[in-house]
Image (cartoon, rainbow, N blue to C red; front, side):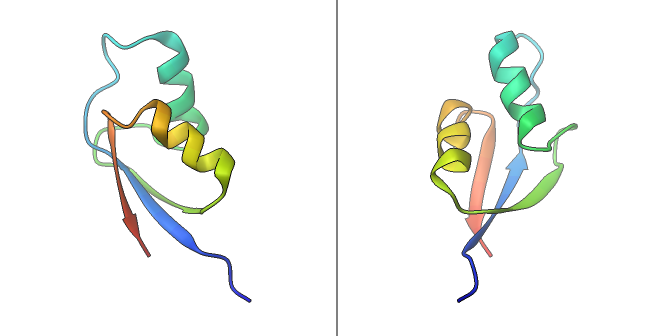
Amino acid sequence: MAQKQIKVTLVRSVIGTKESHRATVRGLGLGRVNSSRVLVDTPEVRGMIRKVDYLVTVSEV
């Protein structure tokens, strides 16, 4: 069975955010504004997204 995937896009700058939030964005593989990554939908990834939900958008793939 194929694993469910989600597309995460950085829509706001990390300038002025907490260092731990910047590290989370880097951990998701996002660098610049409007950069995107397709990731496997796991509880760990969902937790990272929840932490920086004000910086990213999520869509189903």
